[in-house]
Length: 489
Image (cartoon, rainbow, N blue to C red; front, top):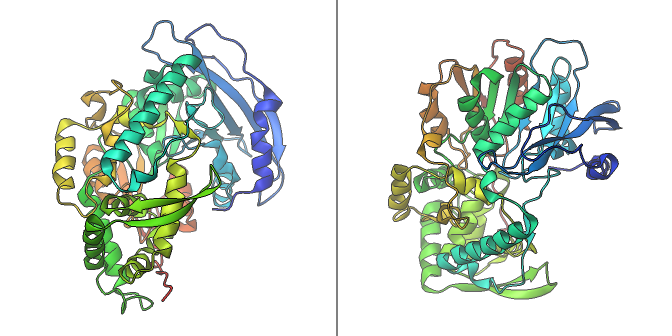
């Protein structure tokens, strides 16, 4: 989605315009936020005034002598006097900047409408965006060309990066045990208190839903209503491999109906299995541009490499529309599309910086039963256990939040779950597992929507606005156009 460059330039200067928040004793939470009022010109409408500041919170509430860290907060005040609860947006990742969403035109369309009768609060969660400290750390140069050849190498790379991160965090005084979803949820409650708000509405996306549910468990009385888009429940942070098999089968069925490619790829699953078998026996070597060192490197791609590539993009409709053409090309010795995927992911994995934000995923973890199910399914799943590699293997030592964090819980909060039928990252089955525990919840199904297609859709936005205004829904389901597959034939 296109970023508005002028807004981006405005946002990245905020740290310098405002400077550090006022000092606090170690481990305490600020009772208020010193906001500065600023203005910017959005992509739509007139100039908008907003408040920007930092909230100080304890880094690790379980450590008696913990230091304070700062969370970046942006608030848009309601345009009209209102008694409605403010809307707090919780972004995904973990690690996405909630504040950066204001750069997106589709997001402006939603929040500026809601701003008519709600305060809007955007937050960079701990360790992310403009909040400090950053969990990014420099990585030394390493020969990581084998990451797409061997699962063990991918895990080794992750663990080596985590070790570098540990050393960097120790030098900077960062306590990685403070960076988990429980501490993150307590930040949200501290923010509510600092803003002197009785209750908040939650608008949450992807990992933000996982965080929102943690807040609902810990501080249900602080929440008015919740909209959860692409839901990851308490025990859903690590994925079931068969959910990705089902997604690939849905993609294959849609491709078989697509006039552009159905003749060349009548059965994408059969073609995929044949290519995985071929790569297991004879990996291919592809030239890619190493953006960090400005050179061409030759990267071997085996069975695991193709599984990993597909796993990363199976839930994104902007990417999976290329899958049939990519596999058809591979069958005929044309690796151009695969090469583009590999180059993008190679540079993502081999950049100059790592991030400790992955510790949040490891801390959320999974129950022993779910881990056993993941391992069992991974033995026969089309994509194996690339679904959870390297996340499932840790790397950040003993930071697990324990099974009480992962248990289902009864919730009486008015909740709107929004799910895409082509979203393998947070499948519909996640919500189906949660719904019996929610006494005032309903689900909005978005047909043909991938993980990133829901929040930007105008019809979905209209249902979100009606829900927050406590109006009856117009729709129980929304149908997007079927994906149009890409061909180079």
